[in-house]
Length: 234
Image (tube, rainbow, N blue to C red; front, side):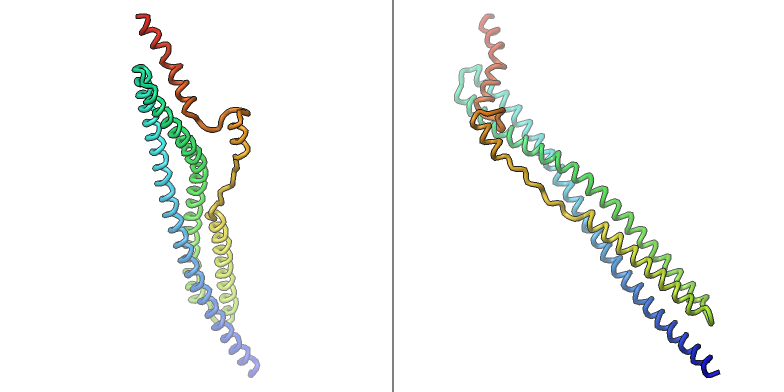
């Protein structure tokens, strides 16, 4: 009789202890979900800012292209009027703008791929967060039901099952959080030195790496010479 009473008291104390641990696990899980939600929100804001900056770069490239076209038109008019010095100044400006546009276009193209990957990773993280919140709600409802239905000899089994559910949810959350952190880890840009290529190009070995004013001026002269010949013949 005494042993039976002792076993019942031990079972009761064990069940109370397990319920306290389970409550602590839910509290920790809720805190971790809040942290994950804040991280996803920060990632969403960062991606939105990156998209805005990307659109600014695209518009800047278009403005540079318009400036180049305008300068080329004016340089041609200057050559027709014999204003060689003005045409050269325009050609120098065109050369600078063409190099600037080429560098900007390369940056835009490279970032477009990274931006697509970041957006995809963000959507995955948001989906995982929604699933995590649904899992938390389901686990809490299941816990309340199990507490209401567990009694007597089944109390220990019910508490153990509830604790296992909590542990599985926490482990699943930790795995998803680790994947989300890995997906949004900032990508370090890779260096791509070109000093040797530029030295060779400057020495006349291979195609030039930068547009020069002389090259622009020669191209413009070649474009207007046929027109000038026709006008002179007329």
